[in-house]
Every structure is written in structure tokens, then in C-alpha cells.
Length: 388
Image 1 (cartoon, rainbow, N blue to C red):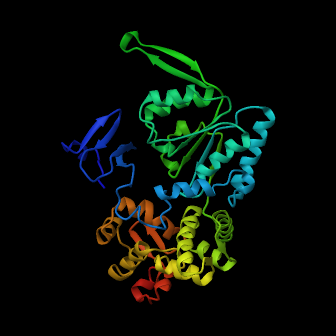
Image 2: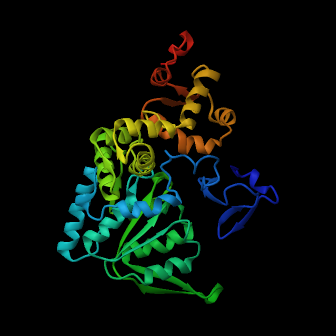
Image 3: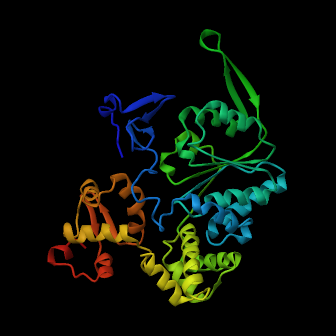
């Protein structure tokens, strides 16, 4: 991973500027770099080592797609968990239907794997309108977005995933379309250029992001409904696992479902991924049925422990405890010790550990909590105890 700051971007051979964006040329690093508040940060972690291989990663992987489509709920009544989000959407959907109008624009934000894309599909299904999906990184030129907007049907749902990664020039096109259902198109160049205004059909825009803080204020202000998705409870995940098992035709008892749910890091995408892997194990070594013993054996083979930690999580916590006396330790030092990238630690590995109370992020660095010591059966020394 490479960061470009105002001084470093002058390095020849490392970047190319095009359409207001900076593209890295050095092999092996992420290809797209975005500018934000006078600094440049990596926009994608797809080249981060081990990221795609982690079975407990909430990031989508190609193998998940066919199963996610099969398991995806189609109606709000089928969607499990996120009760406050569902209630808000149900009211907005019913109000839009009763008025015969396009529903207010919706921003869905929160960690990956919690159901933002699923809810966007459900909104279209409940409204009984067409659904079109694209993503921020896919839209590169103004013509692409203009073509999509001008071809929308009345009241249609347009869903843009990773909306925070839209280029600024494309955001500006969206502003008038979202507010007035109009497109301002500049024809010609220089002194002879003129603006032509086109009407677009009233539509519902649904944006999804894992990084709501990166949205520009003008774009954020155009969403009438902003909903945050939270991590799921073990009970909700158990119901999701049992529902998915029924769809896949897998025999599973309550204890087996609980075992999978408790190790799913509060994320349905991970729960369904673990279910598929445990199903394979049960078919080969468990007589085709998933019970508690079979689930435990399968998850032990996958090196996913009772908290949903994998090898990377355990290595991170043990490095802080054993090499740095529990911390505090800076993220760059920790990244070097783990042979990982600082961005990967901050954006992929840390959030869950902080969420469940095993790691603290302080101004001086990362600190392992007492829960982390108890998890590994390690007794903290006097200095380490003073950190708590």
C-alpha cells in the first residue's frame, strides 16, 4: 500500500493524473487513489495480503455471489434483524405507495456484509418498481451516469454501492437529478459552450457505503432517509443460519445453528459462508447433519474460534501482548511486526476487535484489553495491569 501526500506525489513514474484522480503506476499496489481533505489515501484494499482468503472477512468474494442471490430475502417480512431500519423503511414505502410518488432517496451505511444491497432490492420489490444496480468505482465517465439517469423509468430504484467512491464530477451530475429530477448538460467547449437542461423521470436513489464520513456534504444532504445498519445479535444470526440451511436443504439442529451464529462476527455474510463450509464437512464426516459437535469440529478445522477470531486476529492480539507488553503500540510498528499494511489493520482487522472489547485504540497506540488476556489464558504483569 502506498500513500501519496502533497510532497510524495511528485515522485516520477509512480502516478498519473486523469479526470481529477490519481492512478498509481507502481506494480502491486492498489490502482485507484482518491483525494480527500488535502491528502490522498488508498481507495481499495483488494491487493492487501490475506484479505480475500479470510473466511471471516465481511468483504464480498466472487464465490459468495451465487449463494447470496439464492439466500437473499425478497421482502421486508423475510428480512431478519435491523428492526429499526425495517420500521423506517416500511413507513416510507407505504407512504410513497399511497401517494403514488417516488420514495425519498435513501442512504444505507454501516459495516460490510450486513444487508445494504439486500435492502435496496427489497425497497424496489416492495414498491413494485424496476431496480438497477451499479457501483461508485464502476462509473468512470459522465456519459455513463448520464445514460443511466436518462433511461430510468418512473419511480424506479437506482442503487449505487460504494457511493463514497464516486468521482466529484459525477457527484455534481447527481445533485440536480436528485433534487429537481433534472440534468444539466454542457454542450460544446470554451466561450461557445452552453448548458442544456434535460428532465429525468422521478426516481428513488439508494446509496450504500461503509464509509459515510467520506461522503461530501452536498451529496449527503440530498438523502431524505439515512439509516445505519448495526451488527446482528447471536439470536438473529441463528435464525438467519436456520433459514439459509432450509433453503440449501441442509439438516441442522438448534445447537449447530447457535455454534455457527456465535462465530459469525455479527455479520450475515460470514454466517452464510461458514454455514456452507460446515455443510461440506457434515456431508463428508458428519452424516449430512449439522449438530453442535459437527459444527465445532468443522470450525476448529477452519481455525475459527468461539469469538469468530481467525489466525490473523489471534496473531494481532498476541503480538501486542507478547512483543509489546500489551501496548500501547503504534499502527505502523504493529503493521511491520505483522507484515501487513497499516490501512488493512485500521480498516479490516481492528474494527471487530474494538467492537467486542478486545482492543482499545488510544492516542498513543493500540492496547490489548483484559478480555484479550483472558481469551488466551495469559496473566498480565503489574505494568500491563496498570493499562486497564
